[in-house]
Image (cartoon, rainbow, N blue to C red):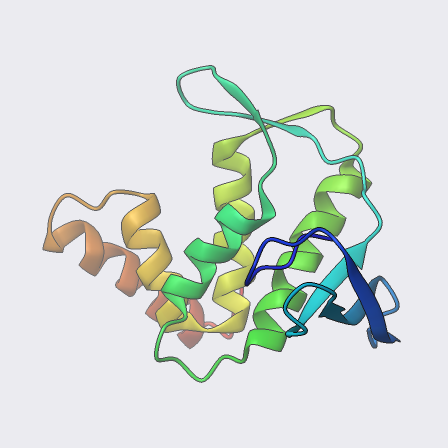
Length: 157
């Protein structure tokens, strides 16, 4: 594995641990070139569907892209990185279990919003405002009113 500090290709594994969910192995490594330590993670590659964008282009599902968007929405919110990772794991699991070869980017966005709404309402509104491209304050207010009505009715979805 390439060292992130000096780009040397050889490293030795010092410690390996399985995650609490059992789907990731965390390895502490030491570079044989510069002797600095770093962490790598291994996960089984699942067959994720290809994402069909609005313009018809197709690209592989990118966990990191979704993670960046969710992390940005959760910025300065009381949501831990562990919970965000679990959130992305749940999304991936849903996509894999769906067994579709292709999935629209809109469907992924809607799933992210559904999961985010359960996780943190402020993060949900932040994500929705970018994802749905609210044009003005009225669209934003309309979304907030829908949330308030749902909350008053006891609806959490």
